[in-house]
Amino acid sequence: MGPETERSFEPQKEGPSSSSHSVSSKKLQMVTPVLPKSLDSPVQPRKSLDSPLMMAEQVHPPKSQDPLVQTVASIQISQSPESSSASCGSGAVGSLDSPLQPWKSLDSSLMMAEQVQQPKSQDSLVQMVASMQLSKPLDSSSASTGSGAVGSDLGAAPFDICMGNSKGIFKLNRPLHEIKREEKRLRARELSNSAAQLQHLRPGMVLLKSFLKPDDQVEIIKLCRELGVGTGGFYQPAYRDGGKLSLRMMCLGKNWDPDSRSYGDTRPYDGAQPPQMPQELTKFVEEAIKASHDFLKQRGKGATDPAAELPLMSPDICIVNFYTTGGKLGLHKDKDEDKSSLDKGLPVVSFSLGDTAEFLYGDDRDVDKASKIKLESGDVLIFGGQSRHIFHGVSSIAPKSAPLWVTDKANLRPGRLNLTFRQHSAPRG
Image 1 (cartoon, rainbow, N blue to C red):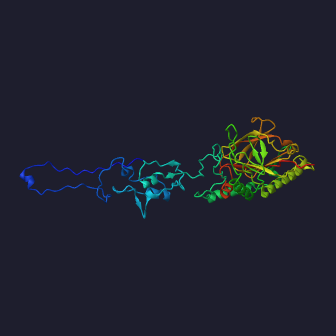
Image 2: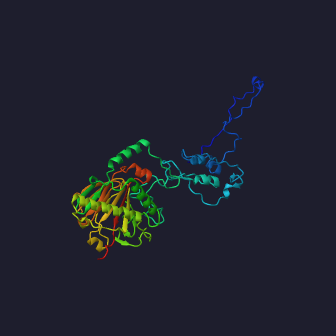
Image 3: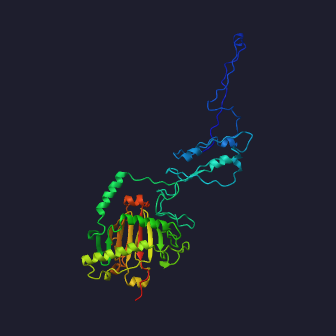
């Protein structure tokens, strides 16, 4: 914003002068300039355009409903011709020598991270207002987490899978009618442990629809969020050639490095050790494997020994991935565990939370030949035995498909949270 237009006031012109007696006999009236009502002090002499006074009579930031921004907008900078620094209370503002922190807009999504540029001035109060920066909240939904470099630079803030946890960010509750509608939809899906909700996809591959109850899902999301913002938490994996995965990843138990395709005790990205496997997650995995074995017995698919088709597994490692609505993962095999685990076909157990994913799987690395299923929030997919080495991947994420209670109670960001559990090494003997 440039300096305000200089106002010029000129006296009104009198009529033509005359030396005639008729004119001189009349009482002369002095015409004074008409000043605007807003001016309470005499007109100051004109200042040159480069004078500090002419640089900013008033600073007008963009209008906002934010009272903090309105307060800044109401500041008027005035200075007497004799002084080069403005006085503020008991001390001069010009004595401030510490850098000023940028102002943050608490509620306006229109306040983009643009600096308010003002002409340079010797007046420190002018500099103070000119240096104010109106910034967009860090949790803004317009910030892409699928392909950006957020969290891929050392020293960057940890990626938070949940919204509403940053200072100054508030989340509105859902309307009551939406909550009621969602509860009705959930009741229709609450056959989570019935045989109708379990599907035998192929030998060694079982899908448990809606296996994780709503409260369990909220617990898992909050647990992952707590671990994810700490040491060894979520980051964006990258390759040596500069390529980056379109997801955020956190490892538990051991770190898996996508560049070397190997497990280790620390991750090369920052040298951090991965968090340990929480016992709460191990419990859910054991329950899912038991449910799949019961299902195979009932269906006659596993005869009297379902573990022959789907071996037992005690998870000691887990890869937690968060996909934004634009995230995907190409067809691949999980073959980086210890040879003893791979040879015995110890299964992979996958939890899906949040938005629905289109999951591909097959014997060949061919998208056109791959089978497709939808993995919704609460679904558990298990593949081991003959299906342990299948190609699998995620082709797309359906936006706004997460249950409202996941986004409201757990505050999960738009996207899909996926946990894949494995046993790194099989026991000997």
